[in-house]
Amino acid sequence: MTIGTNKTELTRLANEALRSQPGCGTALVPDLQLLANARSGRNWEIPNVVLGESLISDVDRAVITVHHQLGRRFHLLLDR
Image (tube, rainbow, N blue to C red; front, side, top):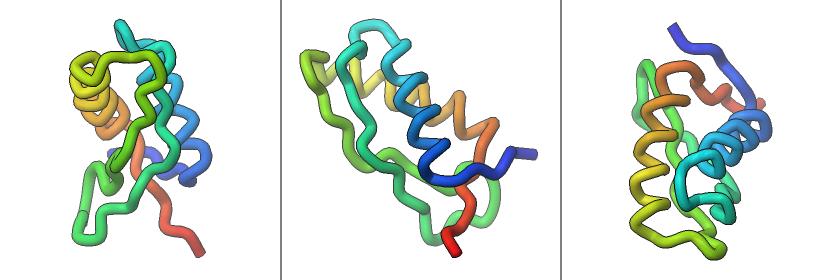
């Protein structure tokens, strides 16, 4: 079971998790997006990442890691 959280909090968590990955200290997750057809589990994605000084290969690997780590723990609450 996952914990529901709002977009602002989940974006903050994603940024912290991304920046803690090797070579991603300057990367930024500007926004998360709700997956329309997700019925359970991770119902969100990171559509874009601002690289800063980070290498795209480092960021690609880190985004996959962040999706797996946070996706097992959190789901995005629907905006009302």
